[in-house]
Length: 457
Image (cartoon, rainbow, N blue to C red; front, top):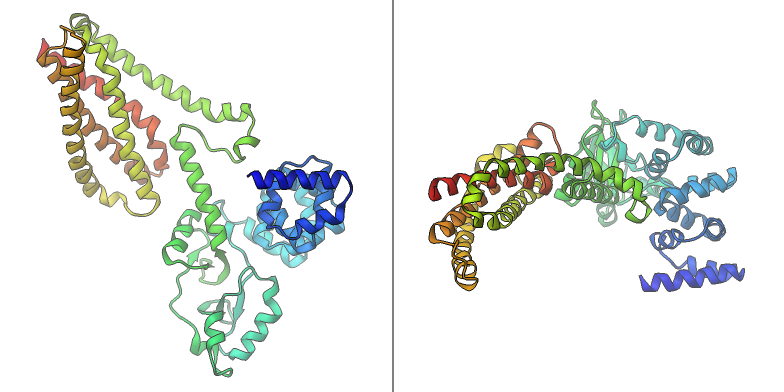
């Protein structure tokens, strides 16, 4: 970060002094992602100047990495020729990502400047459902025919590979675009017989995904098999594109960010934190806060209902925060663990019996350990150290027993609700900390007062 800040200030100084050749010499040595990061903090006047110093290929790669606001600013300032040069250097899937984020007038300009073939591919990808394999794939891949020789395959790769997103994996297609197999560039290079046919070298057992498969499942499949790319087929088993590992990584980051946001009691937002206004943050946070505030009134109603019991044993009130917090934390531990397991494909709803048994045994051990520690704490600290006459053996026993039961029930609820949510079509992340805590708070109070009433009255 310090290095980037120093570099950014150096570049700004060079631009202000109109030493553009020095700026260009620095920029051409940098990674596109680093260039985009520096461009994020430039003024509206400096950005176009520095962008125009980049070579065509580097400019296109850097443009893809920029935030939407900067992309829109540059597009509006581009001449038609400049826009066409940038678009010609970009892959189809990257162009689609930009088209999806831009206002209609900007999209219209983009589509006018791309080639008819690229426009057709863009429209093809845009018609697939959002967050599906079809929506994140690229149509730029190497295709070979089964009767080609190794020599002919290399010739085709050299002729068409410059415009393809990856040339490491080549796909063998029939005349009807049916996927017959695949062959790696490594296999082709290591083959000594240049007249060997692709059919004799290809792997025919190919793992594919359908255009309508959810993007998260696609990313999991790529991760599971450690592929660099995954072929995408339509409903008629015709190959229409590939999903590359870099797109899958973007999906995984997006899905993880969305889950973390939901688990923290917010609705997901698209911009980075610093580019999200306080008003936007307010709109994403207030719905959950309202819901949780209203649901928390149940805990108030429970306490009100047991006012007479609390009046007799006022000391019981002192242990309410400890019991509620421990219960909420216990439920959150289980829910977050299960949500992660669901997202990684480690557990499904059919495993609910195994999950409940495992969490029950775990919660029983945790509950017993916490209840023993709680009993010792109540008797020794609250009773002896602070010499509180209200703290009796039966009070300590009531609090400790509640602690044990609360932990067990909280963990069972925490492990069950995400699985049920997934089964009925909800995002399991919704059943995370805030939601679980609210439910467990109410239950822990009911258990506490039920046990205290039975033992102390």
